[in-house]
Image (tube, rainbow, N blue to C red; front, side, top):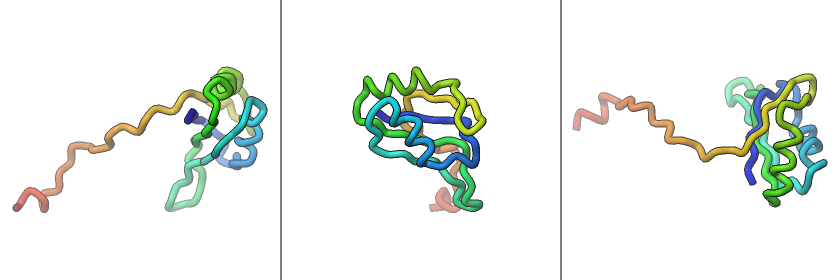
Amino acid sequence: MNIFVAKLNFRTQESTLRDAFEAYGEVSSVKIVMDRDTGRSKGFGFVEMSNDDEGNSAIDALNDSDLDENTIVVKVARPRENRNSGYRSSYNNRY
């Protein structure tokens, strides 16, 4: 189960996030999304848990809980939507 975690403190480390979720079961992976230009956390990340029941328990327990002085939002991650903004380059339309 892929879990989305938002409103993370910018100082929260992946190890801290892993520890919070491991209290509810086996964690396969943890990824805090970083800004590629600044290297700073974007304040959200993903936790992968192999067991759906454990993942749901973690979501129920950790949603709206405090982690590193922030109240976090925890929910099932949704597949990434098509990010095409409808913009078309005029260069591509010439030919």
